[in-house]
Length: 312
Image 1 (cartoon, rainbow, N blue to C red):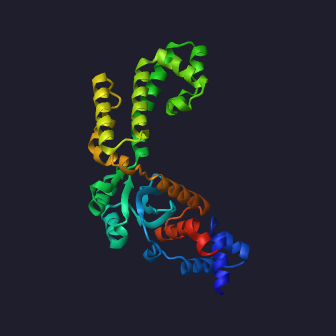
Image 2: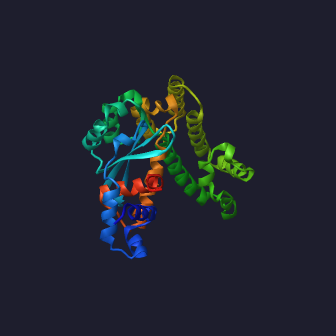
Image 3: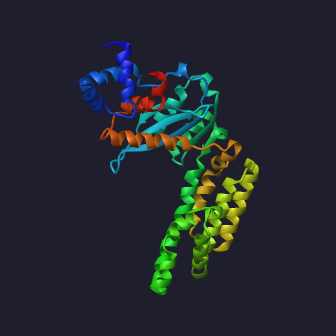
């Protein structure tokens, strides 16, 4: 098989499957798979990378409900293009730390931020390799945590309100879940009117919603790390003094990880690009009717992200 034909097959494999390419080109699937193995490494080529800038660590379930996970380690370079560094079986701290330590020293020095969620295995692995000052807990994972108690309060309060209000009045509050999740500047006049009705009947939910919006505003503001820390501490004090108990669990988590959370304000780095890679893996899994080999996942991600450039 010529190099040109192998490159042609690799281009066809981008956003496709081995089985589909084999059928289209009237070749055996094993032959196409062999070409994939020859053309795409199962691990990262460090010599092709000059700068890592931002490291992202996240997990994805290969089989939902089966405890089968892989850890995806990726990077966002200076030109904002994502780079797949590793797909690690499981989510062990030791395995993740061992990989991070294997990064060449020259490249390790280019890492300015290590972004992850609040899973301790990833946090401690990144902290021990890059240092606490570079560790950033992703702001969107934080937002998810403080919106959960707001949603739980909404569900309980709306259930109570449904039993108290006439059906015609209650129907005016349809779709309020999405209204509560939007920033105030994104609300239409109809949404604002709906909120006023909701606030009138549910003052407790109004209070909780305002606290959630205040915390979102803190993360949206271009504060320094020191200023953001002070604002978050004041926010915690206000919530605790209000007597509102729905945020208690979140505040406990926030207090524990606060140092890494406010590191976000140094350069406003997040692991949003990691979520994009996770979506690609989910698409690959659906496309291939399941994909459970970590090396194969790395190869397919490499093709989807960099295949156009390599096999052009």
